[in-house]
Image 1 (cartoon, rainbow, N blue to C red):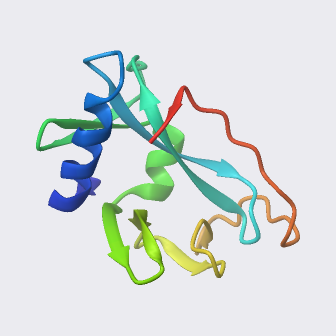
Image 2: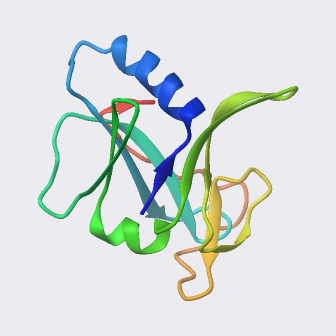
Length: 129
């Protein structure tokens, strides 16, 4: 299971209401890359695929594909405000180490594809959250 905090659901609902498509999902996924091996990705998606897991809170529907779910199982999506800014964060109990910015991680059983720090990874999504 993957959970969405109340704060994240509230912010996501606000963002989704500004989109032109009324029935969007939020897609959470991982890609190979980043300093530690895997990077998080998040974006709006209008289409549910056959292998997607779906999780819901407060009217927000979260999709996770089968390969990402294995690495994200038990994770929590949150929205955090601090003195340094605000944004979405993923608390992943499977991550045994993360990079300094928190966007890249590795797990005990999977190392992903680490890249030297400073190299940029590109992730394409339909609409950024």
